[in-house]
Image (cartoon, rainbow, N blue to C red; front, side, top):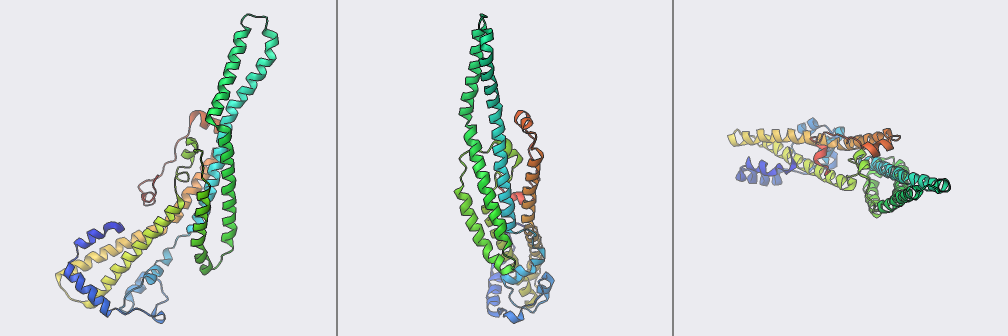
Length: 331
């Protein structure tokens, strides 16, 4: 179920019935105090609790058993490592291209200087020397036009900066062991590193061959992705809470009218679909971290094949774009 399907939900709702129900819920529901909250976090425990209005925190706790192994800081650490590798390989790849231009320049320049005295008596010597000089000039102009040396330096600087950010985040992350400290610092760290990353603007385009090696890492805005996923999950949980409260109200209110039966069956179906979608989104951070690690390992496997990549190219990485993760990625 998509959280945007609220319009479909309203099609099954009798406006008068829901209006009366909401008025009754507001007057009859009592907010739970801290002593009355159950320590159990399972969905079944919430179902069997005394009739009262469920809170957002209770619903969140009911899904704690499905929490992802990775959180926002974990994927941010992996993302920074991926960015570091992205610019390391961009630097190497650009450097190899520069070598492919500079080595012929050095060889041709040296050769023309060495052979000139030996062939100067031949009438075709001038043509040979001129041709060699023309090739050298062409390669020099091409090197300057492509700005390979400046691109190499830019990529090297960016890889160093991302390496420093990656190291500092790992060290900072290890200092927070308790849940309260960790949750408190998480949002602050994300905002801080978003500002630092935004300051490191790359004015040189990453080579297309490297983008093929890192299709997700090179395109994703990890900070927007985290904000989008967290907002989406919160909206799902709020919808789930509202549906659960309505189900509990109908059970308490009783009655055998056809309208209530239809509404109740629909709410049960929506509850199950929402629950499945919430559980799926709980594992998204694990999935995106796995993709980052896979792309880094794939790039390492091509470490010694840069000439082949330059001359032949590389097959792009294939992903299952129909998965729920790629619905949230704008590649």
